[in-house]
Length: 59
Image 1 (cartoon, rainbow, N blue to C red):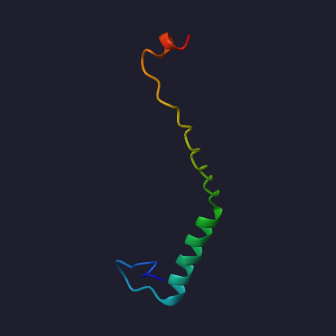
Image 2: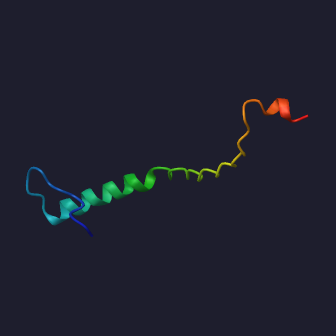
Image 3: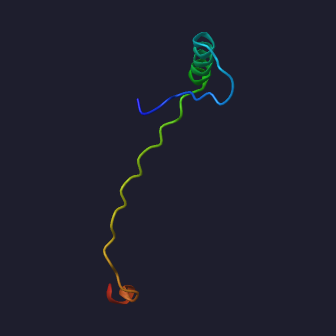
């Protein structure tokens, strides 16, 4: 773990109060619906270069 998950700014909670806080936060997180997966973007198909006057030479 990189660091503390909960940081108390004021007061001096005991272990029971911290455990209750963590339980409530975990329950709130579990109650949220999962975030939808974002599909990966499809690669673009490369189009070969055509000059602006290509419509004239196509015949």
